[in-house]
Image (cartoon, rainbow, N blue to C red):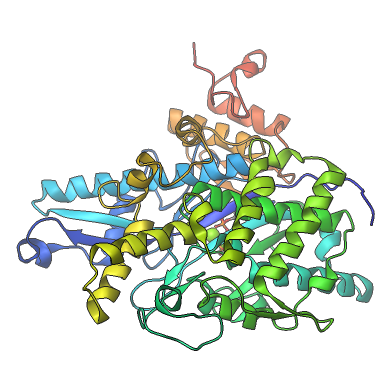
Length: 514
Ligand code: ATP
Ligand code: MG
Ligand code: MG
């Protein structure tokens, strides 16, 4: 094993949200006028932050808000280095969208329609559609290169390790799912009786059909291999992971990224995980989707009959050795406990079939506790009525609406833990993380301030009227860039000697003019 220091990398999170518009008060009074899902999403985007003409926009915090055709608003965080920043940016995006939905509802109320908008950070709707939560990780091209036979073979080995890790990861950080069929006895593998029979670890699992795919919508895969690095393509690739459950508890979201980032570091440093490669990761993942405790078969290519929990535990053990060896990486600053303390407790909970020690931090455990509480509150409910109740709890758990969503109440009661301070999230609504997102964010904020037309992508900045040549930002880690900063200065009408007033990298955005 080599202990070569791995490269710094950026990571981002994309979340697609479900939308619902429901009447407030007696349904018969408002139902006829209620917007359908597509109109509801369009109405929410009509209340986007001021200064934008389209529904595809980059924000001063460096993130992106997007409404594609259809009705799933999406927020993509800016590129972050630290897990804590990533979680703050993710939460900030949710808060921005929730505000837009609140303003949209207020507008409808002025028209005499009493309605509530629900943005759902879940993965499936009642019609069986699925929508995603994507993670992006920058990696050196050499890690996943496929240009010749030698690089192809080593990349395939790396990808086999990654997909085996990802297929078993919901045991650790799944969002949990009530299963149809209720609290009946079941003999299916991994499903026990009573409460256990009605519970699975991952709602996204049943929708994944391939390990890798270049086509995200046609064939849903664990990893999307479309080669779109959003950076210098000669040096970098983007590992685009498309199988996660959308999670609500910040420690769950943080742990998911932390453990994945650490695995990438260890792989880059040459650590070997090939003995944990599975024969059929998709079969294991599919079983995990219906398993309450993750003890589903996971056979390795070397012929060992393990379980999904065994595989995750083995990854974690080796990563702990790696951490001891390499030292705590910058990306774990302020979040190290997720790996050293929370992750082992999740494994222990799965082993002992007792989630009591993690049920304020891990989504599947928190949601499961809520289901049980409802069950105890309504002991006589059964059949369809019980299933409806469970679906309602599930929806409310993922609902971003401050009045109907459960998260604010759970946090206030101490029943859901945070990772970030509320101030960190508030700041992340305006302030980009310390990556090239800081250059983008300052440029966007400047353009909005003076009303300039601009076009921005993940790797370029441009003024539209009069048009300027795009400034390319090919290194996602760079926080200074003369051409980008001078373009921002030009927007603000600053002279070169005043450029220091553009205050980048999370130190409060743009300096006040004057
Ligand atoms: P799709 O929405 O079809 O999946 P996409 O993933 O390319 O497409 P976006 O929704 O714009 O597009 O999201 C891009 C994500 O990649 C963001 O979360 C962003 O933070 C992240 N990202 C940007 N640049 C890089 C990079 N160089 N390496 C890794 N991740 C990056
Ligand atoms: Mg996207
Ligand atoms: Mg994506």
